[in-house]
Structures are given as structure tokens and as C-alpha cells.
Length: 444
Ligand code: MEV
Image (cartoon, rainbow, N blue to C red; front, top):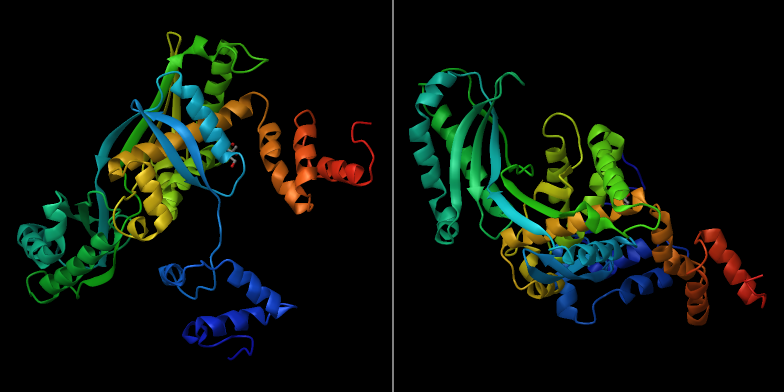
């Protein structure tokens, strides 16, 4: 079957050709081309590097790069770079960080930094025999990757464990070669996958070229790192006396606030609908740091959500306890993040972010990202349990609405002043603009 709308060979076209093919789908193609070009970097070499990060690149897509200032983590103050398009997220992180810096800041400890990957295979041979031969197999496999692991070993990392896992209770004939890695300051995806592909080839050869194990040939299904890294975990927390919450809200006493906050977190553990949103608020912060430092936020999120469901029920990633008048709030999260390799050293803004953070190693960046995740979550739950999020959110969103309605700078200034004391909504802003544009006082 051929569909005349299917465009063949797009990837083979030059960038200019791709641009005009895509622009031809717009009513005014020249305008489309000029919009795309307007987002090119002025330095052609830099633009070429961006083009080469991925494929079929036409232009760049801007996201705001902002700072959560004065974030105290383990007694040290960081200016934390955040890349995020959603209004209020940076403000919430900054406000929480300010609140907690007066109470000792965030405390954070690394629990472990081990990553893992698997060779998944299907086989119906004699597993007991394979297990018995495993010490020999393991030596052979490790030898196969000696040239790949040498560098990592020099940095103190490498392969830290390897075992066979019988998965036949979940799927007929399914086994794994499960491998653990220490990838030091790199996220390590390429390193892990290169090792695993070698192990897959070695395993297939070891079994299929011997008559010892019986059965049909072992079939490698795939070899790939796991984005679930339950042994690459950071724990971050804040604590204070409940009475320190005095004044946090006009309507609630310190005790009432702590009680409501505790209930909100318990609800996020009891109900999956709330849990997903609660955890999304954590990833607002974690992802924004991951993006600003050139890290793979999809991997980090996938891991976080799998971890949130690790006991079979998807729950809140944060935990609260109130004992003897002391409030303790913590986030325990696996975060496989890197500070060397990949985009971290290529993307100039990722390099900038890392330098701004004092060129941390991966463990320190885990602590920073999780602190911002906890800061965002605290800010969200605090707003939700007090005045609601819309007041603050719409205030932050006001400029977006004004831009949508083509407000000029004078109109924006007047609107910002007016909406300090009025509720923001799209309709209210439109009405405000209409009234000042018609020369009518909005105050009537
Ligand atoms: C919005 O991006 C995030 C929140 O919905 C998180 C939450 O509800 O906890 C405010």
C-alpha cells in the first residue's frame, strides 16, 4: 500500500530542503521559514552542534532558564538553575528554599549510587548446569569488556556485580543476566549498554557453542540498562518544630497547618489520583534541574514513578512525621543523574549550570535535584492546604495572559498593579485590558 501523503527520504534532505518542505504546509511558507530561522543561534558552529544533538533538526525550541536562589543544602548555599516552562514552579522552589533556609535548610544523604542493566534471554536448557558454570562464564564475560571498563575502573567505578536470575515464574523460559554498575559521575547509559551488548554476545556463545547445557539454543531477546535504579538513591529532608509554622498562613495556627499538611501527604499515599499529582509536583523541580544540567529527565521520571509503586501500590514519594512537636518531611528517590559525559559537557548552558553549582559530582547533583523536588512539593502542598494554588499560579500566569492578549508594556504595568488586589482569570484580564483600552477606569 502506498499513501501519497507519505513523504519518503525526509532525513536525507539538506536542512534548507527540510525547512522548505515543512514550510510548504503553511499558508505563508516564507513566514514559517523566517520564524524557524529566527530561533537559530547566531553562531553557526554552535547551531551546527545543536542540530547534531538529534535528527531532522529545523531550529531550536526555547524554554526559560531561571534560578532558585539561596537554596541551603547540607549547610551550603546554592543558586540552582532550573529550566521549566510552567509559571510558579521556580517561584515555589525559591519561596520554599527561603522558608527552610531559616530553619537549617535541606539535609540530604546519598544512600547508594549503583545502576543496573539486564541481558534478557529465553532458553529451555539445564539452568542448574548453567548456574554451576556461572563463575567461569562471569570471568569470561568480564574479560570481554576489559577494554570498555578500564577507564571507568581508573575512576573508581566499573562492574560491581553480575548474577543469573530465573524469571520463569513470570514468563516461560525467561532468564536474565543481571549486572550492577558504578558509573561514577556519569549517567552511564552508553557505558552500561556497551557492556551489556558484549555480555549478551558472550553468553550466547558460551551456551550455544557447548553441548553441556542441553535444550534449544539460547535466544538473546535484548540487552539494555534499566531506568529503574533502586540502588541509586538519595534521601532529602527538612525538619522544624511545629511551632515554627506560626504565621505561615493567615487562617491557620501552626498546629492546624502541620495537621492539614500531614493529612495531605497521607492522602497522597492512600489515593493514586492524588499520588500522581503530588509526585508530579516533585518532578516539576527534579526535572527542571535535570534539564538545566543536560540530564535525561525522562529516565529520571520513569524511575521515580516505578519507585513510587515499588510495593505494588503507587504512592507519594514524600513522607511526613510529626512527633513530640517536631515536623519531619522527607523525599527518598532514586535519581540516576550525571555531571560528566553526554550533553552535560557539550551543551553550553548545561556546562554553565554545572559551573554555577560549583561543578558537583553526580552524588551532589542528586542531592541538589532532590532538594528542589522537595522544595517544590512542600510549596505545592502548603498552597493546596491553605489558600489553594490558583491565587499564586494565576498571578504568575498573568504575564502569559497579557502576552496572549497582546498587551503593551504600559498595559502590563497597569495590569500587574491592578491584579495585586484582584483575582486573576483570563476573562478578568481581558475585561481589564478592554476597559483601559476604551479609556474606562477598571476600578468602577
Ligand atoms: C502543578 O504543576 C503541580 C501541583 O499540581 C502539584 C500538587 O498538586 O502537589 C501543584
